[in-house]
Image (cartoon, rainbow, N blue to C red; front, side, top):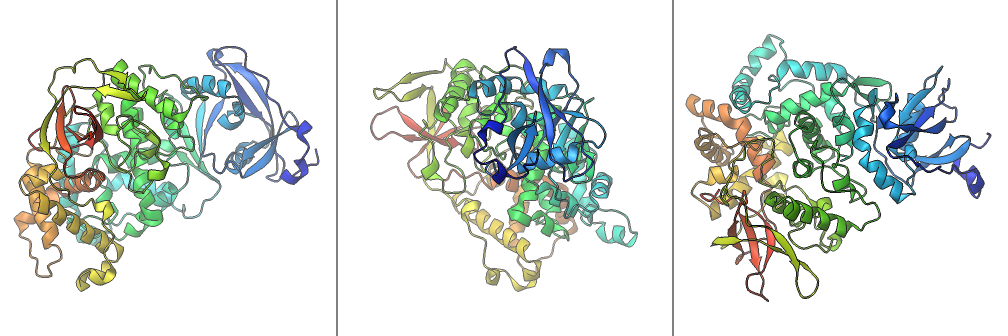
Length: 605
């Protein structure tokens, strides 16, 4: 065919490809991509039905859709289909020169105009991505800034501690990291690799690709067993996904984000920090995303759907229903939720909440609600949901305090007994009411500022002798002001409370860390004193526990401010709940409340 651009097809609807329905249960379409010897040739393929139970051979593509309004023309059975630029470039890159290639890509293998078919195919996603010959992770054509990526990932394993999933091993190894960093000068003189001088820039540039952060990537990468290769492709560059995921997991599990990003106050000599702060710190966020994908893969046989929702608060979706539907295939234990692409988003989220709270009697869901804790002011965009129903598209930066089912539960504020049967009724106006048994233990008298609500200080406010440190100084000064604001409200047990009593893996906080954390807070205030002198003993403690403390403060506690909490709200313990909650009494009817959020309440955990 001689038609090459979108404009050539305007008005030529008779040339469009029309899908034949999939009539058999468990059937999918596979894409047979035809070869091309030149990148300028048009993309041609055919679609063929196949039964998953027959174990057909194919490679599954994981990619970011991109702008759905920016499309290119491809040809299916000599008919026109329009696909996004991302898939278009992927198909051009992946086609062989001398033979056909069998692929699966959701945008064309599923009829996107048929909601019923989409719902059925979403239920098959775990099967589709569990049995390909390979998973092809398409990161785009742009290779700028990726020079030396392979060496970066290989070298990272040399300067990082060993990978482990054991709590005790992680804790003991974490105590050595900053102590070993003291030998930085000696390592430099001996020209040996070290954590702080390692060139992280290629990895950080890679993490800025739009693929990272998509919620669908979790199942696309996780559900196949370890015999299925996951290959990341960016332009001409190919590398095993495992190489990046393992590095991200080690950095996350050992609480190393603040140290290598130059945000640590216990050890702040990190010359590579600028690459971590590009695009508003996106590499740090996407390292966390990659860490979570790797974690879900390791624990897939043990977690539940709520674990998946809690672990993926940083991920994004174009369709708000996908915040739930993209996770349904991850737990091995089947969920009671069935995808319904024709349902409204309010009903989808309400059904999820009722299924979890009433059907499974799981109170952990309350820590995901309400959806008022995002940093951005999105009040005009909020869904009209009861306060106990989480808006999964508005989870924001505040991490819930509840534990994962895959780890030891650190808190038991509501006791170990199962709650009384949880049920939902309707008030006189048809609004759903959640019924729980609670005990009020305190009231909110005053609130401290959340660090996210504090602007970065102006450069003129930063002490002159550290002004040369640039942006990292502003982050550190903001941390000091946040801690001062917290201390103005609380004085006793501040360290344990600020760390929310747990580590970054949601394991219970080791007892020996608490006095070190208290000392760390005082060190933060002293940091700006040019006459500060640290004894060797104090240095030893700060370096031993600094990595874990800073990760808990920056990764968990810094955002733990319920932005809408106010004086007069009550703190209560709910029977059977893991953590306490902040509620607002209804001015209209006694015994009714609005949920504000979960809370760490020292002495009641």
